[in-house]
Length: 252
Image 1 (cartoon, rainbow, N blue to C red):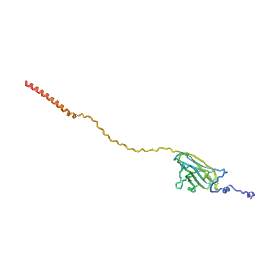
Image 2: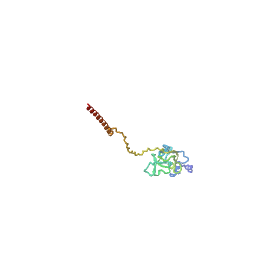
Image 3: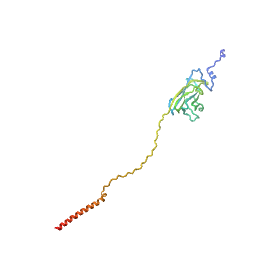
Image 4: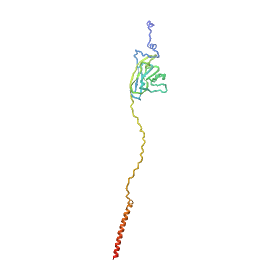
């Protein structure tokens, strides 16, 4: 063995990663890495009304670098949105893992939606794999009007992490999607008019119009004296004529 190698042993990069990085706790992505991936959130629409549903997708691209695990955290405004639970049989609220290879070991602990507005998904693979595809999908329902956003958490408590072999983190870029929620358009519902009770009008009795009866019998009582007078007059005239005729006969 060369004297130089005895004094300064040669250690390869993989051994350095295994020695310097734990397999638990925070993942150090390193500051000199030229290999950068991306974790991007997208929505099918960014302008909605209260009550609308939005389909959200999270994609991971490792740019050819194999990883064995990803830990994704997406932040949303819990006063503006609610997450539609995709697994009602599991405790809590879950989103959908659309990745065909990486799996969630414990849905209750590794697929969670907090009341503070954070979605956290941890998925692992038994093999080191390079990926460039959609991995998570879920739906949000707009609850209140205003300006808001969806954001991939890249730092702080429980940030998004892409984990390589031996727990080494892969650096990546995240993003934020701004959204506008408008008040729902009020459309008046058709109303059925209340039935009205028809008012019943009392039948009115009209007084019959009097038409004078011109029948002869109505004038008969008044005509009897007149007829009787005429009869007496005719009788008197007849008697006078007969008397005159008798006098003339006697003279002859």
